Image 1 (cartoon, rainbow, N blue to C red):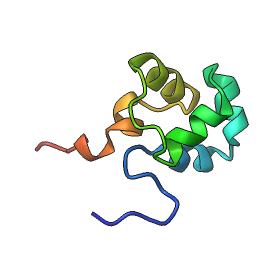
Image 2: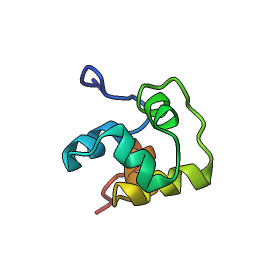
Image 3: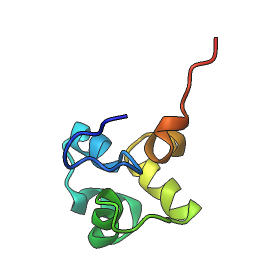
Length: 78
């Protein structure tokens, strides 16, 4: 699978954040985390967030943990 430049291969935080028009600071504020933590996750500089952090970020983005952190695992089964 090919990925766009500047898009994480491990999560879709930046994708959903940009769709909402939110800054890193806004997501950090909503999630109760630091902007640097969010930025490091977006840029694959940090790759093992806790379950709690994943839930907070997903809630701030109004998306599921699955959609944000495990997008390649979302398969439609018919």
